[in-house]
Image: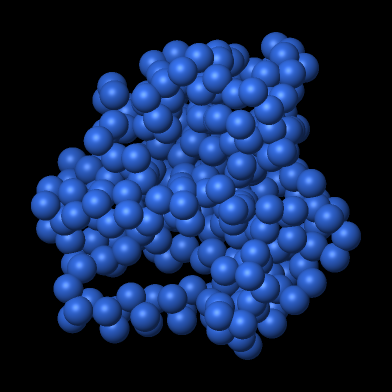
Length: 288
C-alpha cells in the first residue's frame, strides 16, 4: 500500500469546548502521514491556547476570515496532501484507525475520487444520539438530499481545484461540493464503517441559520438539476426510514472504550430506542 500524505482541514471559531476532541482524534490516528491544518477565525474563548499546546502536530493560523468556506479554502491552499479530509472543530474522527482504513480503501479503489462512510451523531456532551447510515452512492438520491456526512468524507486532491469551496455558500457548502464533483464526473465510493462523529450542539448552523440554508438550497436548485419537488418526497421519507433501520445494525460497532473522542459514561444510553422505536419529536430537546 502506498503512503500518501493526508491533509485534515479544520475551520474553527470559538469552539474550544469541542476543539480538544477534534485535535485529539487526529493526533491519535494510527496512520503516520497526516498534516492537520486549523484555520481559526480569531477565537477569544481559549481555542488559541489549545492550538498552542498542540505543538508541531498542528499547523494553524488565527485571523479574521470571510466565513467557513473561506477558512477552508485557506486551509486547502496551505495543505500539501494527496488526500483531503475535512472535520469542523466541533466534530472528530470516530476511532484511531479511520485515516488508515480510508487510505487503504483509496489504494484498493484507484477509480474513486471521494470516499465517505457512516457517522455517529452525538450531543454536545458526547452522548450518542443516532447513527447516520450512508448508502452506496446514488446520483439521483444525491439530488434529492445530502446523504454524505461531511466529517466522514475524504477527497483525492486531484479531484479538487482552488478554491475548494464556493464562498457564496455559508451553509451547505459541502452539499454544493458533492454535486459539483458529481457533475464533473468524479467517482464516489462508500467505506462501510463509521468514520466520524457529527456533533449536534446548540450553535451549529443547521439550527441557527435556517434562513441561510433555504437561500443556499435555492442557489443549488438554480445551479444543479435537483430533485426537490413533492414527487421526490416519498423517496426522501423512504430514505430516512431506511437510514434508521440500517443505522441500527451499526450500533454494535459503537464501542465507547475504542473511540477517539471524549465518551461520557453511558454514552450509548437510549441509542437503540431512538434509532428504531421513537419519533424525533419525543427525544430530549437537546437531541432534536
